[in-house]
Amino acid sequence: MPEIIENLGPVEARKRWVPGLIVFIITLVVIFYLLSIDTPVPWWGAVLVFISLLFGFLGLDQGLKRTCVMNAFRGTEDFDSGEVAIEESGRARKLKKKGRLMLLDNVVKALTLAALFTYLTYL
Image (cartoon, rainbow, N blue to C red; front, side):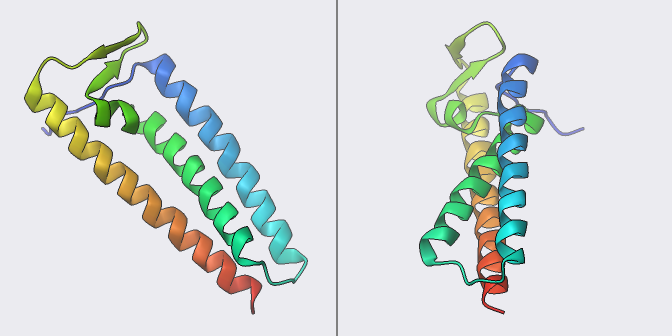
């Protein structure tokens, strides 16, 4: 069985996935509205969509995987009793790697959807 590596407790995880879900839903509503008005979106509109998608994806991913990317980079954890340093260097290294992969994965997802959205506004 693979080792489960987390750095967030249930309360801290909820603090990330709830706002992430809200941002993601609002972004999707804005995207569908902009697609419905049948007007090309300027470059800065695509950048704003990318940023909001990234925050939404990151919040959802961090909450569901119970791993904060920023805590992973700093080598800390917060299991609902405050942020503390991770003593075990092997675990900290694994969390840092997981954080990098989570960030990269979410950047790719947000960039792909933002590019698709921009492309669809020009059809």
